[in-house]
Length: 338
Length: 241
Image: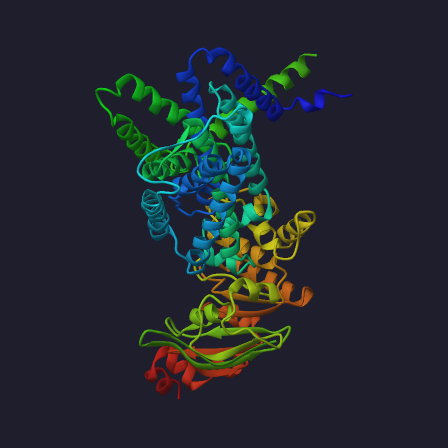
């Protein structure tokens, strides 16, 4: 068997990534705080990567991530609390419900070509409406937290005493979401979405059904958010209408923009860098300057808008190309010497 | 192939196109001319489905397509370019063409179509370049290429010759002639560049203030008093007479 052909640069990077992913829990498993922090970073990386499908590729400034996340959380939580249905099923159903709502809302919005600022406002309103609705719906939500039972089997109820299993589940979901991003990017849907993000009329006269393409993107994004929402409820052990958090939606959008709209790895990279930094600021300066991370986010956003308007991903790609060129030249040099 | 009958498009109180009627036969290159603000682009937008007309009918290949969505009209075999180039600035030339090629091709054979169109439109050297790096002449060709990739039977070109120098215009005209003769594509061309209109079109329709004021061969149009008046004013007609 010829193993050499599998060791190209991309596969080497994936391998390095997987090794790091496996080493992290071994290094930090003694500190539950650090593991929770890393799991939170991964959660944001997943959500930002999912946002990339509707926001980065299709150019729709969606601010409803927390709405779909909250729906997933409440579906999973309620099914577990009231009927002892495993979150594995709950997460999937939560994703489907989030997807259904997204289609219901996206259909008229995309049909009437609502975009840019107006789309942002409409999607943001969805978070607020759902928060109020769940606050008043006492059977499912209500003003107090509803705690998830631990059950006899941690793998059935997804309630663990440590964050390590959540970490592994999050890593798996992140890999799947990045693969979905990659698959979409180089498919008919991906090319259509990228073009739609630039000029809707020009794409429609090329035979692209803009409403359907955007609905597909929105549905996939909402489904991922819903699934992750289920896991989010299990990690924190309760559900509460505060999960419908507009600032969280805003943060995911910022990560998507800073990472690089339409770039496969950009939003995840931005999440890893910025959310880690935010948590560091919170841990070190939280007691003195509680909102400092927001100011830092604002500064980063301004700097990126000024100097790197397409996000940090193109910067990373250029760096990677330089490394590739360097190694290629090194290889040529070796061959010439031989 | 295309029949426009009594087409009317209004924007509030402004009547942009007023009861316009004309026909385009299969295999023809027809020119649509008129002074600025005559309603040429509005007429194109209504035919291609970007605007819904208030009155009249558009029949394409025997089907009433009035009010159809643009992607459905494209599927039926009509595509277009735009007056001001609307390139997908962050996409490469090849990927831009691919968006159009997906209209009739799937993942397996789309690349073949892209290669074919890139070659026909002489875009091979720049196929990997991002559209934002291209000049106007290349962008015009890219717009034509992506529309061509949809495999249209009819193409609407909106001022495709604007801003091109003499050599670029010549190349562009030759390409359109080739596509018309070899690929049997019917063209409807909105144009201000008279060299292009006279050199390409078999029939010309003249629009002024939203109304069709004349139609005929290039020779008939160039001597038509109403056309001269619309372009140069009444005094020009007196001077000529």
